[in-house]
Length: 328
View 1 (cartoon, helix red, strand yellow):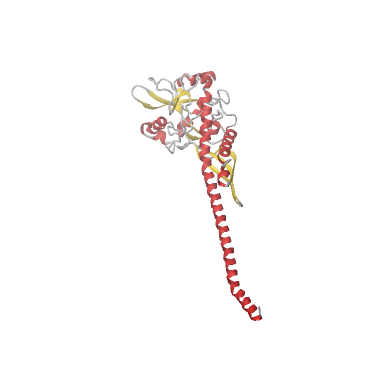
View 2: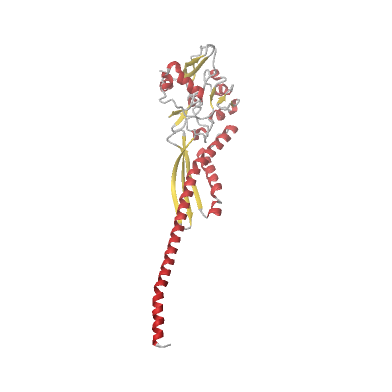
């Protein structure tokens, strides 16, 4: 090939070179774009999965609370450490749900339950977890504190205290909404030497824990004819109380505890006469306060909140509780 041919070949190569460079650049840009899309998809999957786990925790907590509550009620045996039992149960549920999760999605999910405890809001339980989700080189970790309601439609729990306290005194029965003591509460109080225990023969109290909507509480007694007090009792509501026990301590059989809790009324059976003026105070944390022998249970004065022409419907409340509910 003469010099002229070489020159033409070199020139042809130089003409083709920009096109080759352009193809290389476009390929590189395409690779970067593909990598970016892949990274974004992984990031979206990680965050979506994290949000799913965050939403699952209250649901599984509600299930665990109801299951432990049911076991205590059916057995009448209190939990020795409700916080540990609930923590271990919830950890087991989360492990079961997410243990095999990565096999089908390529995602790794870990959820450590740090604590299940009482909340500043007595009708809630506080759950503390650490959630970690990873896909490839993308990960997200966050510590969560969530408040789980014990009065929501998804978490209907019953009051375990009467089932625990009265187990060895005849036991209690229940309808869908009320606990029926029969002679068991009288037997329990008599065993402890509490005066006028017979006033609680055939007493009742609420089964399902429901927060009283009548706030302020003084409206109970200030209403005409005690109509709000009657509606509260008929509906079986519970009230915030610094003296009453929280739900987790109730699972341990404690009627009082250091946490901010709640109380309800143990309601004596209607009576055809109104001669009994004093009997154990009808607040449940007073009735069941056996932590110091009989000293925790003190008397209350009768309050007739309804009369149907034949029977007197009454509570026995001390001055402190009468003042709390606006009766005096």
